[in-house]
Length: 142
Image (cartoon, rainbow, N blue to C red; front, side, top):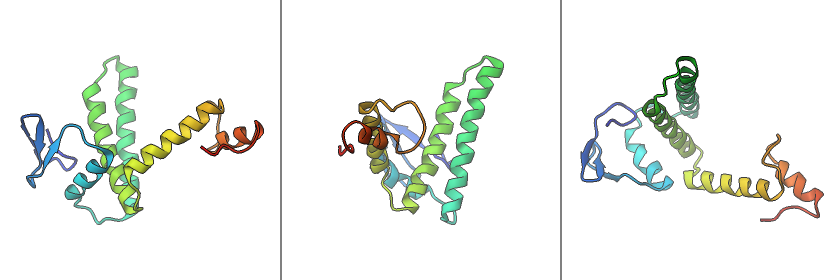
C-alpha cells in the first residue's frame, strides 16, 4: 500500500502506519482524513496546483472506465486507486479555501435531499430545488 506520493505504508493489525508513524485506521471521518493527508503535501501549496491535480486524477479515473468499455476488462482496484488520488487533491484544495470536507459532504446531502423533496433530482441548474420549492408554496427552508 502507498500514499499519494508513492511512499510505502505498512499494514499493522487493521490499521496503517504512515512514514511519519501516525496510525491511521481503515475508516476515517472526512475531517480525520483531511487532517491526516496534510503531512503528505510536498507541493508549493497554491490553489491552482490542487485544482489541476484533481482534474488530472479524475481524468485518470475516467480513463479506467473508458478502458472497461473499450476492452471489456474491469479494473476496480485501479479505479479505487485513482479515486483515492482525486480525494487527496480534493482534500488539499478544500484546505486552501478553509473548507472542511465534512461540510462539503453535509452540504451536498442537504442539497440532494432538497432536490428529492421538490422532485428536481433530474434537470439542470445548481439551485433548481429552490426555484421548484418557491413554485409550490414558498422557498424551501430546510
